[in-house]
Amino acid sequence: MNVIQLSDLVAYLKTFIIEISPEFQLLNNLIDTKLPTMVDILPAQYGDEMKGSSQAFGLPLDEIVLYNIFYEISSLGTSVVGQDQYGNILHGQNLDFGGAMDYIGSLTGIKPGIFNISINERNSLKCGYIGLIEWIFNINRNQSFITFVIRDMLTKSDSYDETVKYLADVSLLAPCYYIIAVPKAGQGVIITRSRNGPDDIKLLGKNN
Image (cartoon, rainbow, N blue to C red):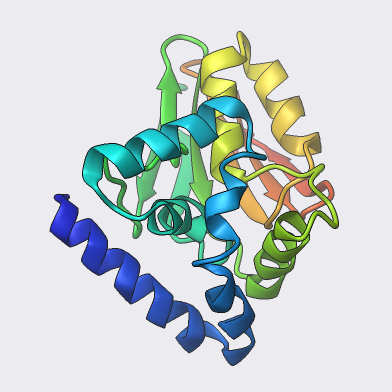
């Protein structure tokens, strides 16, 4: 994706936000004024990378921020995890939302020999909208962006169990599904997440 394509995509996202729901007009109104200030309250590496992307691509900072947080209000993608009769783990995803060089979260990832992970849509638009508004206006910033925590686990976690526990418990801005597996028979899980905790944790078994 080049700079022109990214700029066109962001322009479309601004229109798409309103098409999702007219009440999202408030969020659209905040794009030029509030979103650029978010980079200074995000964990340092994320804010700094957004600033760097803005400078490198010559795009307004608010557009870079919008592109990076859009998944919170309109998550996409479908994943599956299972195993065959030989115990081989199968983990695949049909991702409807692509990434670009300046997308700093992680939608999927592999930590070789430890775990692989993907994210699924959980269709609850208002929850993501509410979470963003709470973050922007400092009502509740003790919650994490759903794609940033995947990146955190890919860079910091050293085990499957640690990753599952963290992604089940961490407070999130939006609901989603986390699908995690390792290259070992019987080890896979689908975590059904609300903003405040797990609604369900389904472990991979012989019949699923």
